[in-house]
Image 1: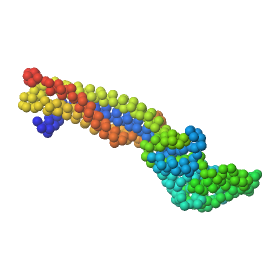
Image 2: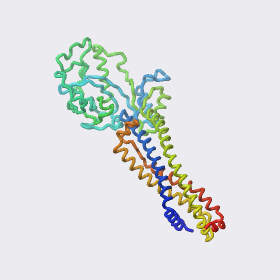
Image 3: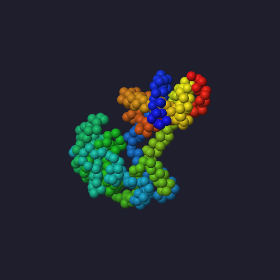
Image 4: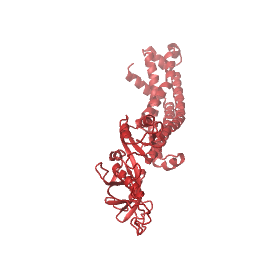
Length: 437
């Protein structure tokens, strides 16, 4: 018998016992749907937590601190150390970070904010979007790149007119010159008063751009080059000391360094290298993500196991269908053997019938799963997310690999369920089969 003949026989046998076939297929549909939907909820939770973490910061970055370091206490976060970190396998970009709090004054309005200095290429790596103006350039002398929340916080100190509460609309043109000062009364009638021995600091800077980000940490700071913030920091300390340079003001050491790792899978190894080889403390949102993934892996296993029970019941149903088929077709099987069908053909026929039940049920189960997932994401997302703690945009996520795995598993379950009946059909006595008409 050729494969075409076997395939035609299989279709005919399944259609001849239509009711039993449909019931077996329904069992596979329920099992496949249960597995996919259960796992999709677990994956939705996992992706949701990842989205939430990404809103807190970038998963590709590692923050390196000088405090809390182990090993050699003489370790310093300086340019020499940064040059060594740049050679670590996986480290795409390494930038020191220095910060200074200051008062910004421009267009008769002021704002109190933190100014962070870092390499312009690091800001580009972070994937920040520009709403107005441009990003920082390494050739800039005194640039200011505004976070949106800072641009919305400028107010007139003479009238105490503040922007709308919660608004992210800029209250000042960010593409202008600003004065950076240490006088909290700057722009008022009390400007320059009540400063004691502290000298008035006035540094001029040029606004170059406005970030579009609204819902992350980058909206609440102003960014500039390392050299300018270093200068601001030194001038600030000098003004606070009555015009005298403070001890160690000329030494370029940093409290924090930011390391960007392009390959997300290498973040953990780069972080481990910095801790072990350099003795510095590190922090990365990726560390928290790894722990969450372990927890979510257990949840997905439990949810998948619950769905798997349904498919196991379906497998028993397929096996029962095929065994009954053997008993009902003893004469047919015997006649096939008499006219020359090989035992291999008999086994192939029964395995193919069982596999077709599994495959058909798997396909319909996948389509049904996508329908349920659509309903959950578009109509029940708010209710379900609130009940199970999901924070992502989708409650149910079905990746392509889950679809293929479910289809393969359903087909495999069908074939395995048909193995024992196929063996029974192969071992059946021809004489006994012909007598049982």
